[in-house]
Amino acid sequence: MDRETLEFDVVFVGAGPANLSSAFHLTQLVKKYNQEISIGSRKGDPLPDIEIAVIEKGATVGAHILSGAVMDPKALKELMPDFIEQGAPLESPVKEDSFLYLTSKYAIKSPITPPPLKNHGYYIVSLNRLTAWLGEKCEEVGVNIFPEFPGADLLYDDQDRVLGVRTGDKGIDKEGKRKANYEPGVDLRAKVTVLGEGPRGSLTKQLVQRLGLDEGREPQVYSIGVKELWELPDDRYPAGRVTHTLGFPSDTQTYGGGWIYGMQNNIINIGYVTGLDYKDPLLDPHSEFQRYKTHPFIAKLLEGGKMIRYGAKTIAAGGYFAMPKTYADGVLLVGDCAGFLNSQRLKGIHSAIKSGMLAAEAVFEALLAKDFSAKQLQRYEQIVNDSWIIPELKKVRNFHAGFKHGRWLGIVNTGLQFFTGGRAWGLFDRDRATPGHEEMKKLSAYGYHGDNLEQRYTGFRFDGKLTFNKVTDVYHAAVGHDEDQPVHLHVLDTDICSTRCAEEYGNPCQRFCPAAVYEMVDDGGDGRRRLQINFSNCVHCKTCDIMDPYQIINWVTPEGGGGPDYKGM
Ligand SMILES: Cc1cc2nc3c(=O)[nH]c(=O)nc-3n(C[C@H](O)[C@H](O)[C@H](O)COP(=O)(O)OP(=O)(O)OC[C@H]3O[C@@H](n4cnc5c(N)ncnc54)[C@H](O)[C@@H]3O)c2cc1C
Image 1: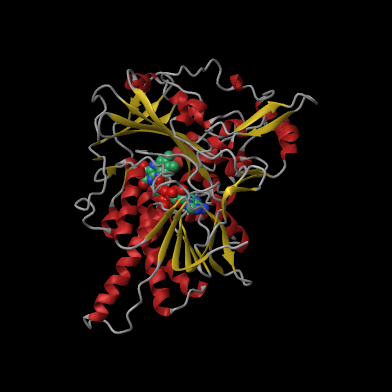
Image 2: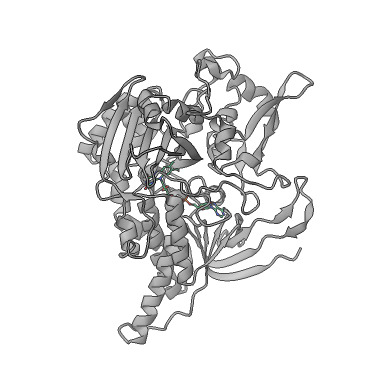
């Protein structure tokens, strides 16, 4: 097969805020260095023009970007001090903050907003729009961006040094045969490959396993955020208003909380986070969010409004103890795939941008030294440690672990950490950290039989006005995949689905997937049900890869351009 090979200095996988900031910053560092050489204020040889490629699996930059989002602007200010003048799309500065505890009937407003949820000086943004804008800024300074190019495999030499990335083939049918439009993926070779794939990156997962980058670290734990945009009939919830909630509908053993952010044009952005270390096998994060909206306070807020967009995505919540080693020969990890998100604040945009900038600085030094080995790239870890990223994460290093013992002890631990600077003892000690999927209990532990959701969501119905089923919601995520391609959700042993998983957990994939991808259907024969994968619904959230109790689901990139289109999210 003729596979094209293209040579770059640096290839960035994923056009998220981390990688785009990195690519942009790198061009600025090289430009400044060459200017200083040319005017004689610095000694050395000028660097030749560097070739940078950013590949993105979505159809456009931003198409797969879903966030809250309230952005702490400190990193963006460092990247581009005049970001406002440069036209950064900001919905609104945060004007008011509140924190509510929801019982099933009441919304109790906290007299003070807990410090981690204070957002004064921050901005409400659509991260989809902000990312698309960052992409434009990158192109203005000569970065090559290739949407519709998923990174399918990393290229290694015989000593496991990363040499670049192979993009996915196009035009393969569902049987694995070449179609008329077949195009083999391209080998993009680079001195350094920077992975900024977001949470549970598919290449990052391969790399971490292959090189043991998580040795001695805690397993990463995740949450899933499910959200909708609503258009309200009036300005009852103004742009700039931020509300966070705790309580309803999560049970006290499940980590969860909600948010409501006011955007422009009477649009509100409402969502709910559920920890992917929940115990109840019948829990369904999409249903948790739908129930959230039935709370009298929220239902009243949404009255007369119209749901216009939907999406879901995972969040890497493990923090400081769960960060893998972020460098190896020829490769760096940035943003969420390196675990830099602060889960106590539910903020990762600032650290994604900052980590991207620091990666650019490490790559720049490597270009000057002409050395792309792990020894040289270790510099990245040093400068991350010296930056504000690590102190911020250290202060909240035991936050998520505290919730392992339920909501109330989690809150006590959060309060204590505030005084101890993040230290925790006894119950809250991280020694007990386990991967989230291992927390899920079997049906028998709850006295459940089969997968009847009524046992958890008794009497709950989607009414099509306030609450929506997954298929309706997926329609509002504008998801598209060519159906004639191989399934990109590799279930390594489907027999388990019909047998052990059905008996032990009632096939929880049907519930944890927020896009109705997994369905157990009658086989018509032996009385067992078999798994049907509606892959074209997939919103690329990666929950299945994370939460499957047997760890037999492997999410790989589908054909480029497929997936959601998160306009305005
Ligand atoms: C529901 C939710 C709410 C959040 N709320 C907030 C908030 O209010 N404030 C805040 O600061 N942070 C928030 N965050 C976190 C924030 O969104 C992330 O920290 C941030 O987006 C991380 O940026 P990133 O560049 O590392 O990754 P991402 O934003 O995930 O971008 C990764 C990009 O890489 C692409 N990609 C992945 N794999 C491949 C591949 N193999 N080949 C090609 N392309 C690939 C993806 O399509 C995507 O475009 C929230 C996150 C979620 C999910």
